[in-house]
Length: 152
Image 1 (cartoon, rainbow, N blue to C red):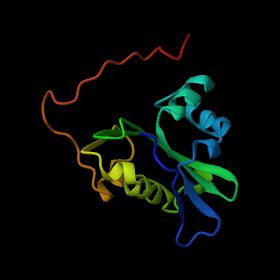
Image 2: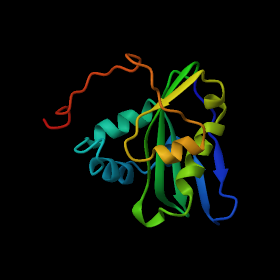
Image 3: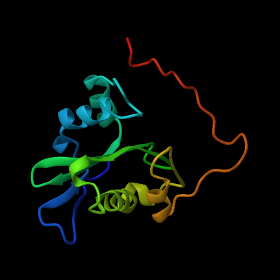
Image 4: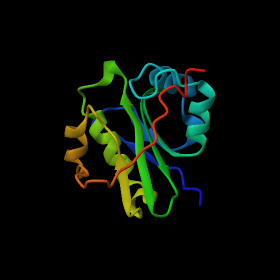
């Protein structure tokens, strides 16, 4: 099922909006940020494009410039994995991270999911404010890590 496109307007910052329309995403800006991030260093532009095509994405814009992003990997029915959440440096400390995550949670697709997970090593304080809790159950979350996948 393909979701409808949603647009959210910031309640106080003029010309600040979030859209889920994939055609509005600035692939170059997203790739530039992600390739220098701690979690996706070296990721190819093609991989970023493919991940956006196959996910529910939230682009945060000030005027026409993309200043933030979040991606929900989902089956659109029961499960979602929130990832690639960021705000560019010059727009941090304006409470935009929280607004971005809250908009992700308000989307109609997200509202019907039974479980939404994320992985963070730097922003647990943010996610706790909007209802996320750490998984503290032994042998519950498992992973396969291939750290050199982008170094080809």
